Length: 327
Ligand code: UT7
Image 1 (spheres, protein in one colour):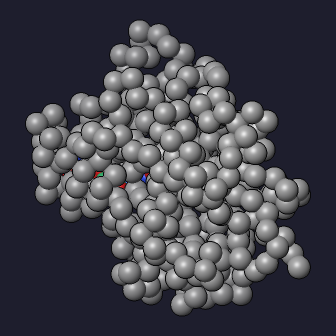
Image 2 (cartoon, helix red, strand yellow; image 1 turned 90 degrees about the vertical axis):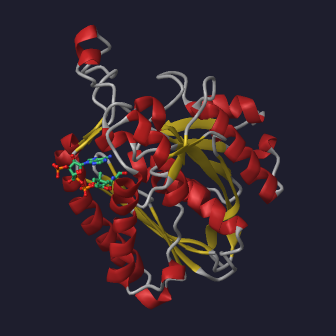
């Protein structure tokens, strides 16, 4: 019987500080009504002083290991998908390795923006399929609040902080990851960026004054590409497995905008309860978004053995991708 990569534990960790739309009304020229109707977001979690990416990443990982009953010392690899690491060097994954006491694990970060968790799961799946004895912890974790210009209403209302994790192991049987498809289009990179503080636009007074260290997005353009890419990658996942829309038991899509989720649901002809939604509580948490949603769905008892769970993501780069799991 074939060995499949299987998700045997999930976890998540969020800052305790809640920032509501009403709170933002005091900070920028916006309204609760605009944010709710244009995005579906009601509130988001924002990291407090001294709370860094690796703190949430490690806690989410710890919870995933606990659910699976696996000791951190038995991990072989830790992958952290993020675009907001604690530092340029070392990786968040190394800090997580230390925090968990994962003595023999390799550790690396992976940057694929909002698609990072899907990319990470996909890499884990390949490792596990090559060596079924491997245990790989995949984490999506972000502290986007420190890359947001809190004076720019077009972006600051959208994003939130947090982390989610999944433990992937090899197991014989029909259940587990059925397929993953990854895509990118770098020609459109300028539509969604954090240009500053890399090597092209290094830290300098000029660059900081221009706000290059902040997230900049041409929202309407990104929206158009996102809906197209998400629909096509969902279809691609189903077709490659000989399945159709009706076979999807739960769709977990990147939580970027409620209108994108509604569009997808309608195009795929899915009932409301087959589309997981938590954007209202957390906003857009980029690489953490699907990871947190997967853990919440799992802990709410919405995933039962044999269900087809379709995850689809889209983000800056552009990157997009899918992962179909028989739970
Ligand atoms: O995670 C990676 C993928 N990201 C996405 O998929 C995000 C995709 N894009 C979006 O979700 C939406 O484009 C946004 C939510 C970012 C923006 O919604 P929109 O309906 O595309 O609005 P818009 O940018 O076209 O702006 C419409 C109006 C503008 O005013 P005028 O020019 O019509 O007078 C904006 O200045 O809304 C204004 N506006 C705001 N008003 C109140 C923009 N932000 C705000 C705000 N509060 N926070």
